[in-house]
Image 1 (tube, one colour):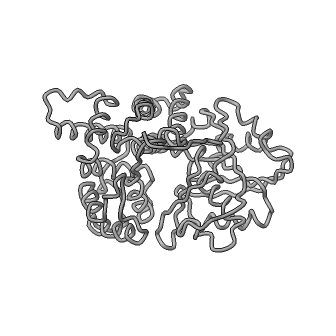
Image 2 (cartoon, one colour):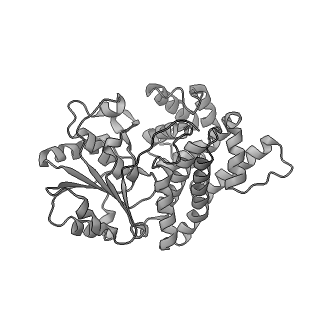
Image 3 (tube, rainbow, N blue to C red):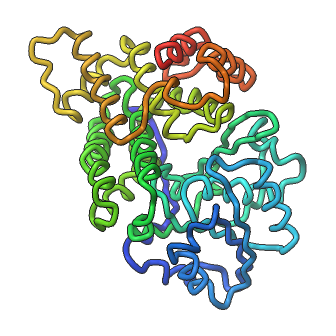
Length: 390
């Protein structure tokens, strides 16, 4: 096991009615920026519950944070936060809204071009504190310090990470997910699954606790994901999916083990260029990446097949067993309704080869030329991965 430090500062308020506890977690003089997305929270009743919880506090609203939040929209929120002198951000939504809140929190007191926080890793000071009310379990953003933002003007999707912008608390009420469209349920399960894979599917370092935790999350998602599609208002199912997505990326299973994240970095370019859903890009890239990197990952791929998917590999060669495991991953994604080939999606008039060229160019521009746990996924290997994913 590798050396590590671990601290998670987010207080989780899990279960029915936990929104009532929000007011006790706010500063006495809270001037709250209420950040949310397209307005679905006004249709399903969550908005009214949040306002009731904020009763007595000064509230400024900012709506319209997109899936894959854009820099252009978030800068408007930064300007509003400065104008209203807010001192707390409450993000109500999924990972995109919470990611957006982290960027706004970092940018409000930043002296300079805020994009530099993402593009140049610029230091920032005195970020605003954040709370989260989760409505779409997927990214784990409610209990980590990661944020990813897309700049439409340059077709770049970049991230930053700092524990200083990690939410102080997060409300996780499974009932808030009952009204999600099936597509978002599917995306959320696939997203959480790949988050675990990025921390698990590398090489062994004698970390059985992390492996077993990761395998438990993966198995839960495999078992509960289809149930979530079939019975979206089953509280226990929704609770298990919600907690799985949080545990997938709250830092616990990734401590003391190597991590990959190449699937995410390549997938980000598909989103930046073609506006594909984040989970869709992960489903496209991961099976092909597993195939290209099978020699480096073979021990953990075989472990994934045996322990998570219950494959026996009777009479199979090692290569056949690896193929069987990759097929199981692909079938899980497809069974959740998330397609696994670039040709399944709208590439806005580009041919598959043109799309691959553009993705490679963007990766090069953004310095993503040595990806993976070994740093051995260069642009040539990335091209191989994308060619397999056509």
